[in-house]
Length: 203
Image (cartoon, rainbow, N blue to C red):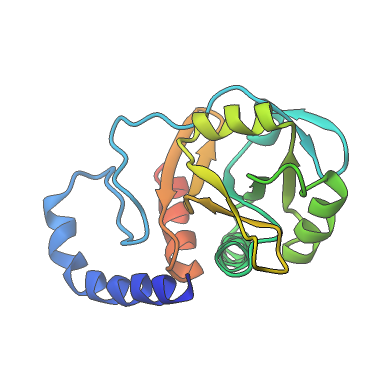
């Protein structure tokens, strides 16, 4: 997993070399950062109701009531999730310094273990503004489908860990009117913060 992250980061360095010419060939609303996907007309998000790490039930309209970064992962993840969640948290800090109030959200793909109490400690350790969300298996499956998130349980019979979760690792920048950007993992927080700030500045 870590080798994949480092490989993606190396690829990002190469992409930066070509970004100047690429900007001249792309429309104004195209992503400027190599960390951001060109999503075109692809739809992400929709109506949901989940349980916050506070124990309160909360809807998508309450979660995405302003600029919001959303990541799907799980607290027992040994490598990728904590790195990605930290990148999101650091990007939020950078955006705050630029005067942009952005909420970081961590949605579990492992509701069996990620209770509100478990998520509370994780979210609070990552960022004071981070919102952790969980729910029933059916609720998590439904919201994952809305964001086109793949996840799958992998049993670990010869390990001290019962199971791991394979899952896609994208961060979604959402506004109340819909998705504004989707970010790959493996890039520094400056890339995410810079692209989000550009989108917010453009209105």
